[in-house]
Structures are given as structure tokens and as C-alpha cells.
Amino acid sequence: MSAGAISHQHRHFKTLIVLVLSMTIGTILLFWVAQIAPITPLRGKTAAAVTWTRVVVRAQPAETSHGFYHYRIDESGRLFQSHAWLEGRHDRNSPGAIYVLLTCPDLRLRVSPSQAETLSRIISELRDKHAIGEERVSVEAAQGVADRGSVPRRHLLRT
Image (cartoon, rainbow, N blue to C red):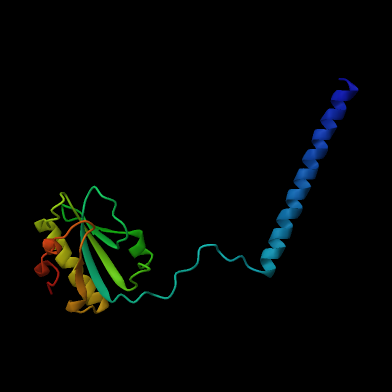
């Protein structure tokens, strides 16, 4: 082996040793700093529990983007909870409102019998659990839909 190859090999070992030492010292330094001042997570902890004061129901065609909601009821009446509900998040524009979304198969936004049954059940459960009065349950018009009667009132107020 030539002298140049040996010199080149020693340079790699020196670089490796410097790298290992600097990483070890950096780790010890970070550990020491963490003992002095605990690291604050970037994601804030959930704020105080939200007080749910009303229920808002809206219907949208199934193929459109859903937007913000807490519960979604599909055409066959299956109920889905969103991550927003599971994490206790509320809509910034309307804190305290629980949003229930009905996804309908067509643009007329008619509620299927199975959706109506699930909607009645979930609204009844939410009203009982959060002491929400009958007058605090409302239907919000879906974007581009003038027919606010697509969700009959009788489906909202079963007790």
C-alpha cells in the first residue's frame, strides 16, 4: 500500500472519530438542557373542555368535499365520528356547536329513512348528554341549496 493511500485512510478515521465525539457531546448537552428546562411540545394540549350548546345539521351531496363536521351520516345511515369530535375541537366561527353532516346521494338532498333514524337517535343522545334544548337544534342550508326543508323538523326532535 502506498503512503498516499494510508494517509487518506487515516483522514477517514479522524473524521469518523470527530463525528462520533461531536454527536456524543451534543447528545449529552441536549440531555443536560432538557433536565434544566423541560421541552414544551409543539402541539398544544387540549384546552378546557368545550361546552356544547347547540346542534347544527346540514346536508351535502356525497361527492362534494365535506368541510368541518363532528358526525357524518352516510346514505345508508351509518354514523361516523370525525377527528374533530374525538379531539374535542370546535369550529372557530361557532364555538359550542356540534355539526352533524348528512351525505346525500343526489343534489336534491333528500334524507333516506335510515339516515333519518340515525339522525333522530344521535340528536336525541347529544341533547340528553349535553342538555341542549329543542330550540338549539337547527338545519343549516348546504352550499348552493335553497331548500332548507330537506331535513324535516320531525327527524330532529325525537325524544
